[in-house]
Image (cartoon, rainbow, N blue to C red; front, top):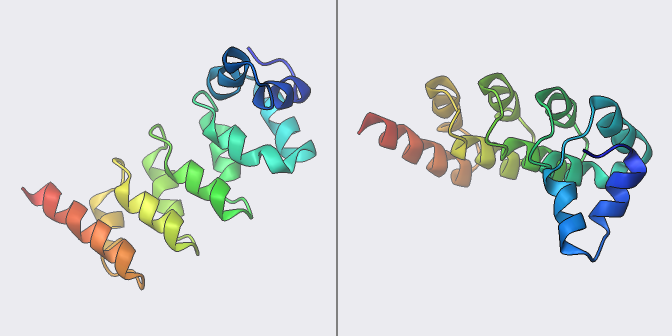
Length: 134
């Protein structure tokens, strides 16, 4: 378990593969994740990338100012459908495209994204709608 923000930063920057992988796979408390987000904002993407990061932290990161962070959140397999729907309305085309690909995108979300201004997002969403009909 990752015990502090400093430990997470150290693991993330480690050249030791085992330590580096701990940053991506080990759990931490909500308090540790919040501390990283607050004091080390350049590591928010890596917090979102962690395989064990709780939904409560993903909810915070879903509104992050950095499109890369929101995109990473949108690609999380465990993302609840409510957060998928929230991110489907994102200003970033890449975030909306990630939500269109998400396995928990509801038929309503896919239908909305099938009318997206972006041809890329529309194509992904329409393909998903067609796949669901088959």
